[in-house]
Length: 627
Image 1 (spheres, rainbow, N blue to C red):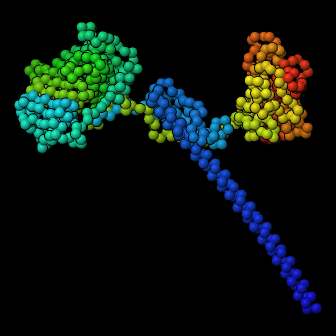
Image 2 (image 1 turned 30 degrees about the vertical axis):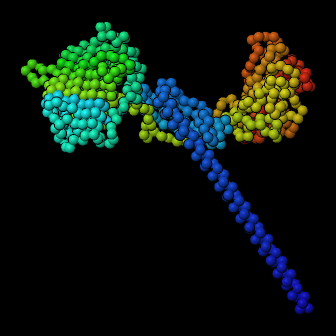
């Protein structure tokens, strides 16, 4: 009896343990399922975050591409579409705001714009920064030599890749550096004399302004028509003459230009290119426009490969800065010259007003100008001339007796309007990254279940793209996945000829509502594109069915016969649209059909009559519909 009680108790305990095990197993399964769900969501979120990051990177790459192209072709570049890059594509739109500002919009798509898993847009404003910095580190820098006359003075520092010569006492108040020797007649204010050496290297290169000069030339040519003065550069030809006050620039003067007259004030508003020689005389005044602020303006002199003569500034010429603080200056950049014996050059002459002291061309209330030259250009400063400059960069500099050249130290960072540094740049504070409205225009993909192109997401349109091109296996126009119909026994006819349906598109009538069935169904239309060879009559029938109804009946939604046999005007591509109709049934996959038939027989949802008998074709497009 005792053994029986023990057995009963054992069985009871065993059943209790089984219940506990089952409860534990259920809890474990619930926990595992929740963990699996969380892991799946995390992986999905991570994948989505990755594609979102890729899309924003593509959009920013589009911004960079746009800025690069705008700097290459500012007047013609308007954007680009579906540019492939890495994991996706980007599309750019450039919208002008003013002559010096534009808005760039770029959208990145992963993997493409037709069926994006992620889409991000960036919008930014750019502006034209038209200032070119010119480094002016010395009062004088020459590529060949400095020749100082008796009693001449340079107030500043000098560097020459050749000797600094003098045949009588002369003074340099700053440092003197030479890759060769410095004359013993020269006294330096900051000893020692740095002979056979340079501040940084031996020799120190002359600054190269070639790219800036080319950009200034382009700006002077493109901004306004070239003013032809002396097209053959022969000095006996009549030059252009400016003898009244006016504003000029940007502009190119093809030939010689003379600015003259004591009451003539020429305001320079942009780069000037005088391809001949420039003469400024008889008290004429030149200065940058005040609207340029602290930016100077360049004056290019000469023509590559031509001896264009010597430009001269003389007799009370006033080359002045504008009224800004700090001011903007004029910069002179001679180019051309074919020999060292006669390189293009500028001669600076002095004048003596009645009862006054000799003055140089850069004069008036302590103002100054800038002279910068490539290695082939020479400059000569006449005897008894006092000049204040930002810098002289030349091949050879000759200072006349008792002449004085003063370095304007504040010009070390001078900038000029236009040039190689003139670029379209991002305007600070205008960057906006946005998630654009979700695209509802879908491109179908082939679906093996429905055996036709299918849009699986609910949108405002669905397009077959190129999936329906051709007809069955007809030579020269083979159709992929033929016959592309959802019916089991509806095929394409295979008689040769170019008759075919090439694409089908279904879309909502208002262009904003998504596909919806039920109590308030959407009104839609079907559009078909195809080809007609003109040998027989052509008719297109449109049908629609709700794939979720039982059975799925075809509903005719339009028959259009636009093609007449042997009618030349009807031959070729066609595009026609069904009548508008409302979606029926319930949510799910619905089907639109476009059918071409080459006869006037009885209309039917499928007119296939057997292989090789006609050129009929039926093509379906499956699209997703919501409630």
